[in-house]
Length: 264
Image (cartoon, rainbow, N blue to C red; front, side, top):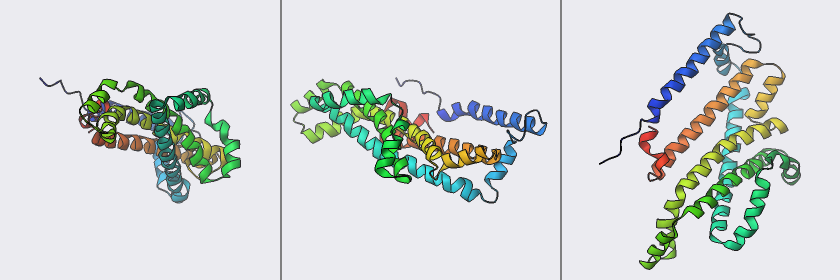
């Protein structure tokens, strides 16, 4: 007997979409009726008009590409480093004894505290942002991968070895499928962290991107551009996570949280 199908996330997203549109409608009415100051809360129609107006390419879309590049580059570097570290700690006890205490001791430290050190090593610019984003992403993926290594069933590995499987076959057919759900969870969290960290560093150090543009717009009380950047950043984050979920469902259909039926 097949288990009952859970409602698709597409159907479940309608209430959220309607709520969002309702908030925009109330915001528009409040701004038009002067219930709230249109200087600080311009109507959504004006914000959308600013997103398509003159100079939008330099104010919004080019910074959007810069932030996307910072986030995804840092995710690629930090995610790879974190996964390698987690696998190493799970497979090698001496490495675990050395690296795990260091990870636990430094995980709670704000990554922004490393700005002076990384700035001295890399200089200001894109490399600085990518380095800090990579550091932020590496921790989460390392912890999740290490936890996944602990959850692997050793009897499955022993059974595969007893049946004549080579080391590469055990890794490909036993370890990797069991570890994949934890890799997906770690990378998904790292993806969200990559955008947060990129925007913070861009704003703090005036590096080209949405973070710097948002800070400049807010400083000059150009609230239409300010909210336009926030909307673009929110859409960018949502689209990235949604795309990641689709890719995860296609590549790892056995992972329960990432069934294709749930994200169509």
